[in-house]
Image (cartoon, rainbow, N blue to C red):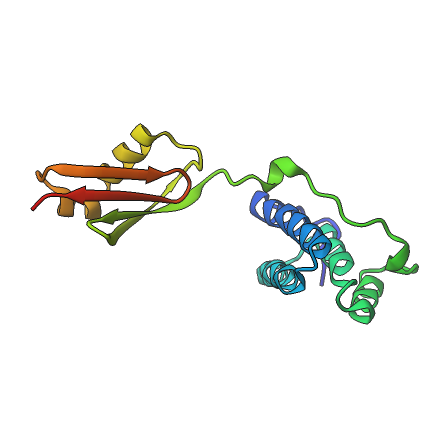
Amino acid sequence: MFGHNAALDAETTALLHKTMRKVTLDLDALAFNTAISALMILANKLAALETPPLEAAERLALMVSPFAPHLGEECWRMLGHDTSLAYEPWVEWDEALCVDTAVTIAVQVNGKVRAKLEMAPDASEDDARAMALAAETVAKFVGEKEIKKFIYVPGRIVNIVVGK
């Protein structure tokens, strides 16, 4: 069922910490729908694992408890605890694990998305230009045409306007 010795991989660890952060901040802001959405994403990730790590399942049960206390308690008991989770401290996250190391950036040529690239969220404009122009699908539409405008919004989008 749950792996008492199953280790958290890097992707699951990052998702767990991002979820703990989001749920905590969303609870403070009374944004319950988005907090529950984040819990569902984590639950689906854990369900897809062959053996979900016990640590992640315990933290998920703790985060579910403000929304569905009976479900949280039942899950807590199924995880092997004899005491109520109501007496457990709230989850804490590592802010360093909540930072994205790569983001997907859309590359538009004359207003149409021609590629999606993975790059660092703080990549420089020169790096973004080089990566965008090196993409095969972008190069096909830019070719030898004059680049009239190059717009780069870090972590979001690259937009290239070319002449005819």
